[in-house]
Image 1 (cartoon, one colour):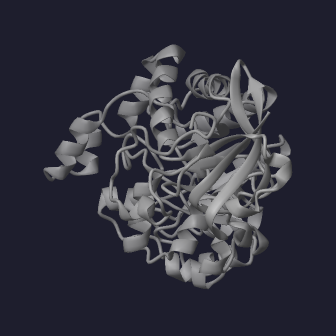
Image 2 (cartoon, helix red, strand yellow):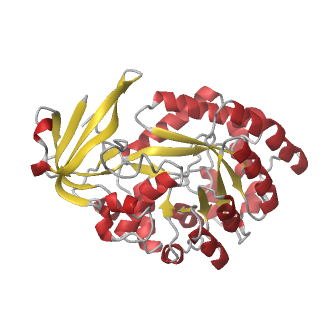
Image 3 (cartoon, rainbow, N blue to C red):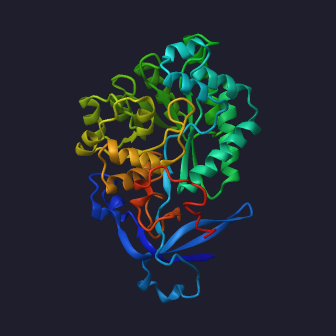
Length: 419
């Protein structure tokens, strides 16, 4: 079936972003079409009609006659259409609530004091292990619906709050169930068993579990597209990560790295060396790390909501951009350091505190974020032949989506098969 959206206040295709492969983006690359129209096909999956492929995009006045009889939705010049947003770094599947810890931290308690009381990541691991798969799915569904209402159409979901064979596989199984439940969204699954070391295993025992039990089973059951490692002070070393990521690649997984967040560990350089899809965080990345990323295909995924939440200095976005690094933005939604499901709010922080331009922000939440998941051939722009991942904004301009600080997701960025 074909559908058309006509008289959008503007359609941002992002075609120039793709032409430049996500680097050195300028305003003209946004592909802004006033009074725009998009024609797309749909398909039925599990009883749902979902968007499929973009057939044509251009000014409404130039809509080809062959689409004259297609079912149309007239936006009457009131709403903008942009590529569906890509949230390329989330920890969406977990149980437990750490709001009390947040209040304690705001009251002056240190992370060490909170951890000594049984809080921190150990609290989430405990709750996630105890929760049933059905409960984890219920919680994740609520979160996904809110994210989608902000215009997100592709979501990366990491494990990493199980830290045992059974609990890590349970988290990834939930992602597989969510994929069937939401055919209108694209979910990318990442194995992050190397998120931290559990308190009930020695370091050596857990490393053995990762290599001999978890990674083989994840790969055998095809539960993840990528493997990630948290390399930082007090967590996994560069050499431990290198060994695990090389093993993951041999088993057919792409690789990603939590890099240089708490200190300069040289992990951005490792990500570039290994050809990782992305190096994420980068608050403490060195000049050498920036240069290595610039010379590689690895995307720098910046998570300014986490720095905001922790009151930490932000990643050097302008240095990365000026060096020619592809930069993406994501929420890093997680229970400890960024309880935020709004990618537009992250865009606001990026504009104000990372100094990113409107064109850089658009690229960072569309094409470059898709590239950080290896999905850039299909996603990130509105062009004929690409996936019809479209977001209809509740505003007449793209800029208003992040100029409006903290707007409500309820009934906001609409699914195009529902407008």
